[in-house]
Image (cartoon, rainbow, N blue to C red):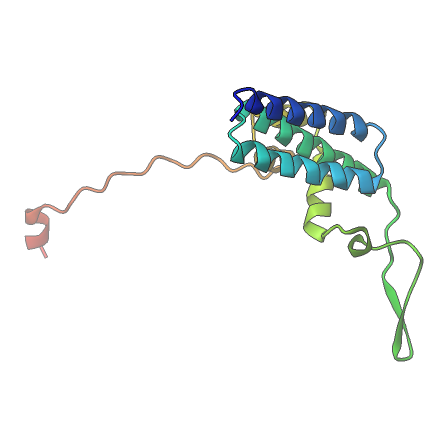
Length: 165
């Protein structure tokens, strides 16, 4: 096996991640979804080929940026009003595509829009790996849990305490 092959793979992955990041600037919903999927795939690839934690982190950053862009685009997209029953048939109220038509599930839509609403500083902390996305979202929502108190050590009952009964 050629000794330069891992470095070539690493450079190829980095170049593709940089290209994907550049595409996000003017992405539409479809492209943002593709970049998100590509970022996820790059993370898995980098892990499976042991390309290093830096490459995995770069791929994760691309995934997060694509998710945020997707959320921004979804927030400004008109909502489908659902269907209306006309006799025994259901007819669409309008021609706006549903999330399912766009290939997005409800949870992905919710999380992407939450990521889009994160303040820039918190989002940058998530991208840099200083905090997790779930923790930043919980803090932004006001649901941050206080740290658990230290467990009290139980003392075994003393024999004299047992005889008192």
